[in-house]
Each structure stands twice: as C-alpha cells, then as structure tokens.
Image (cartoon, rainbow, N blue to C red; front, side, top):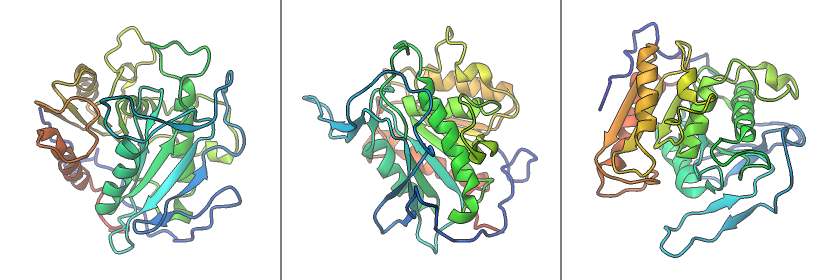
Length: 317
C-alpha cells in the first residue's frame, strides 16, 4: 500500500532549510565532537546529570550473547546512561538534515548495530547526519510488561531538544530533525512524535525550553501501536500537528502490521502526510541488510520520500 506523501509545493511540506549554520564542533565539557562518515564514532550525554525517572537498580551495561539460532546482532542492555552517537556524512554530501535513530529490542535490549550503527551509515550515504540514541532499557521497576517505559520517552524527547539546541554548533538545520525507529524503537519514535506538547519529565536546563517535536518520523515495523487498551498509544494522539511519517512493515511479521496500518489511517484522517509500504515477506527485524525479500528495498523508498519532502536539499536552497 503506497500513498504519495506530500508535494514539495504544498503548505504542509517540510519547513524550508535554514541558512547555512556554523560548523563549530565544540560541544562543551560533557561532549566530544561528532565525526564524519570515515572517522570513529563519538557520543554526547543526553542528560546534564543523572537521568530522571530512575527506579530500582539494574546491572552494568553490557552486550548480551546471541541465543542458539539467533542472528548475530550486538544486543545492548542495562542502559542507565543515555547518549547520542553522532555520525556526520562527508562534507561534500552533507545536506544539513539529521535523524535520531532509536534501535529496537522490545524495550529489553537495543539492537545496536543492526538498527543503529548500520542505519547511521546509510543515512550518511544520502547526505544525512545519523544520531544513534542509546535510550534506557530494560523496563524499570514498576513498569508493566504490556506498557512502554516512560524513561525511554524522556530520553527521546530530550534527545530531540538537545540536537535542536545545538544545531548551530553542529552545522544542522533545526527545521529538519527527524526520528527513525525499529520495532520498539518505532513505537518510541511514534510516541515522541505524538507527545511533544508536554514533557514527560521536569525541565533539567535551558535545553528543555527548545521544542522536542521531530520534524518527521520514520517507523520501520513498529510495535505496540495496535494496543487499543493503552491510553498512551501514539495512534490515539495523532493530530493535524503530528509530523509527516514514512512507515514500512512486512505482512508476515509476527509483530502485526496492524500497528503500521492503524498509525497510517490515523495520520490520513488527521490530514498528515504519510506513506506506508506493506511488503509480502521479510518477517521481523530485517533492518536494512540486503536480502531477496522485497522489504530490503525500503531504504530506497524512504530516500525517495525524504527527497520529495525537501529533506535532501543542501542548506540555504
């Protein structure tokens, strides 16, 4: 199913790119400079101190070994120190747009390479800065297994504001900051995109005075959006001010494609530009690794969508 998202001349098109911003890379004492596509990664802290909303204790941050039969994926868990790993495209390709990436993992782990680092590399290839969000997992004490953890939303909201507040330092367009997520990260991206009117945490500093609304969202096999009993379900919070979205899902995914269908229908009802692709095969967790399944073409379709929306134009044009 495909819906043409939005014409570039429409009043609902993305904001025009800002004038070229300074390329200063100094981010302050708690941060290290972002790197270009051919350099090592670097990370900045999401919070100025301890992250809010913590409950109970968990073990040290670590990678979880794959179980027999599972694909080789770097599975990161026990995250208490959220960060943003910023990866810039080559200077001659840089369009000034950026995307915060939320890896999936059922709010238990983060598929760090499959749905994080590899996605940043793809974004760099099309001139977009990829920013991998290390948000808090697993669920904290007191969070039911059938409800998403609010700590993850706190980290996502703060991440959008932080990137926007430092857009000038990073040479980014503050009006072209998107969020892209897979599975649980897709739910988190939808959650952040539909809950930007109010913070899920008390303001920590001046960064929290900056808008946490992403300018666009990309949801790849998102989960939990079909839960009608969840009052915080992002589908129920779609309004005419919700940012444009691109969605992709496989029909044979055990995480039902109804999640994507429900979100798409809500967006269309609110007259928000949206594009949805349902692929015949692909299952769950395909990321953007090449395969014979048609779902592996979603990055090309997403690039087309971004280009039509004016995201892939050099700054100042």
